[in-house]
Length: 208
Image 1: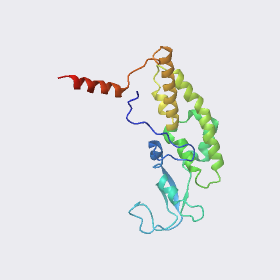
Image 2: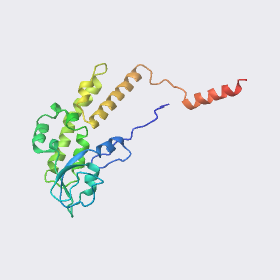
Image 3: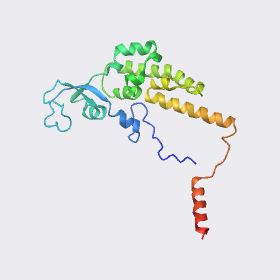
Image 4: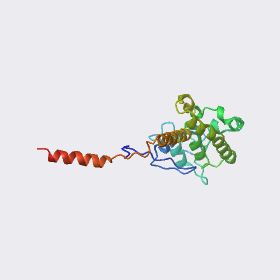
C-alpha cells in the first residue's frame, strides 16, 4: 500500500488553473511588467509601489494582474516578459534545446499560457512558439529519462521547466516500474499497513 502522506495535485492544462496545485499557486505569484492606465487612490496598503498617477511601470504578481485586467475598461496594460518577445521567439524557433528554460523562468509553459489571457497582437506567435518548443524538447526529455538509468542527470534536469521536470520524473518512474516487472518484483504482494497495524493491536490485546 502506498503510505505517501501527500499526493501532488497536477497543475491545470493550458490557460486553466488548478488552485489545489502547489505548482499553480507558485505560478500565480510570478511577477509581470505592467503599466497603470488609471489612478489607484488609497491602495498603498496593498502595494507600496502603486502610484496615484497613470502611466507608471511596475511589476505585479500574475493573480493580481489578472484581477485588475479588463478589456472594456483599461485599468492596467500588460507588457510581455522578455522571454516571450520576438527576439527570444526567434531563438526558440531555431533550436529550443539549447535554452536553459529554468533560468529563463521555471514556469515557461505555464506563464506563457497565462499570457494568452491578455489581449496582444503577438498571442498567435506566442502560442505557436510554446507548442513548437514543447514538441521539440519533449523527445529529448523522455529519451533522457529512459536511457539514463544509472547516470547522473542532475545537470540536464536543472535546465528543464517545471512541466518538463514532471515529465522526466514520470518517465523515470515508468522505467523503474518496468525494471521491477522484468525482475519479477512487480508481482509480489505485500500486506496492507492497516492489516499490519490490526495484527499488532490484536497481539497486544492477547498478551497479559
